[in-house]
Image 1 (tube, rainbow, N blue to C red):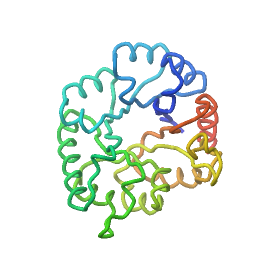
Image 2: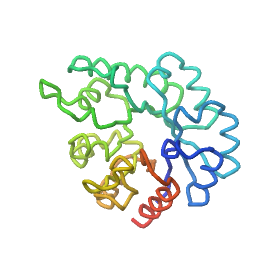
Image 3: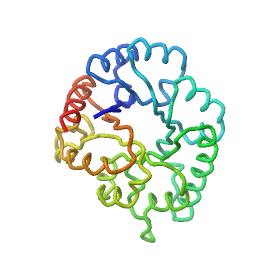
Length: 248
């Protein structure tokens, strides 16, 4: 498989960044995904990527930055030569509590899409688990977001769908045409890897990634991005995960 990437957030607890990039090159990666923590000095980070033969085609940007500092987002994305920009999260205190609120948030994403697609970027939403938990009226926030934002792309984080109680195959069937990137992450068996928040290296947990990737290949997905939210050893995770996916 081509376009295998690595979410640098996975290595946030293993500085320095230069060392992380050397580790990724050593383990066969050619791409990474950025997040806020690596944007402090974009030129220096770009130089470090270049030195290791790595590119950063995708990046995460907070909703606040996307809405209030659009030129900064465009400058960062331009420095790295990104192709896709994703809004990755919504803090607990900012999350709507009813359907109208989630629809309004979807409209904000649709407005952001208008800005960034006009500049030539794919723009989309990266999910967690909270979007799949039914509201009091039975509605599902992720569906409300998609309905209110018909143009946005989707970076599907499959493991978070599962943790949120959703059926990833059903979501891929219903919204697969929107998927431009996928976070490839695994979930440990119940009671295992508690020191890693219950996550696992890809291929060493309970998610049937072989079947999922077969299905996902029928979507427009371009980037398969390895991620672990809290690995105890980031090189172990990086090495095992890319080996698993390359074997499919």
